[in-house]
Length: 204
Image 1 (cartoon, rainbow, N blue to C red):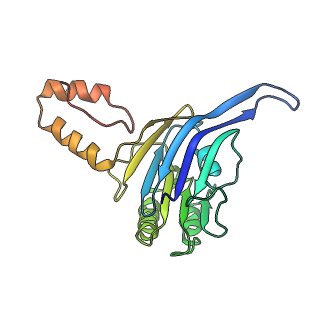
Image 2 (cartoon, one colour):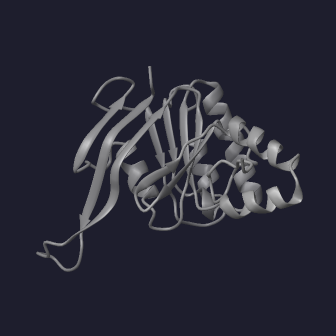
C-alpha cells in the first residue's frame, strides 16, 4: 500500500488585491505515489510549486481538483504526518526534524532543506534515513541537483507546477556510467541535453 497517493492534483491561488477574480495556477494535474521506506527528493526552482505540493501532501491545503490518499484513506492520519517548514537560524531545520517522533511518523515532509548549511544538511539526511529505515515515507524539497545524496530512492523534478521526471536514482547512475564510457563528443552532447533531475542518456 502506498504511503501517499496523489491523483490529478491541481491548486491555484487568487492573484492581486482582495476581490480580484484572477487566479494563478501553482500545481497542474499532478500525479505522484510514495511508498513506505522511500526517500524522495523534490527538486525545483523557487516558485515551482514545491511548498504548495508538500502542504497539500500534509493535508494543510485543500486542492482545487484531484484526490489525495494517505495509506489508502482519504483522511490524513492524526499524529502520523510531520511537516517540517522552518525559516530561521542555523540548526533550526535539524531541531525541527529531530522533533518528529521516530517510529511513529509515517509520512515526513521536509520543506526547507535548501537553506541548511552543508554540515546541517548531512545531519538532516542521517535523520531522514533513520525515519525511512523505521518505515516512514520521506519527501524533502530542494532547489538544486541531489543525485549524489545518500539513499535517495527517487528524484522528481517540479517545473511550473508539473512533474518533469521521476526516475529511480539507480537508473540514473547506470545511464551516467554509460555516458562516462562513451566518446568525448557523445558526452558533450548528452551533457548539453541533460537538466536538473532528468536522466542522462547516451545519444543513439
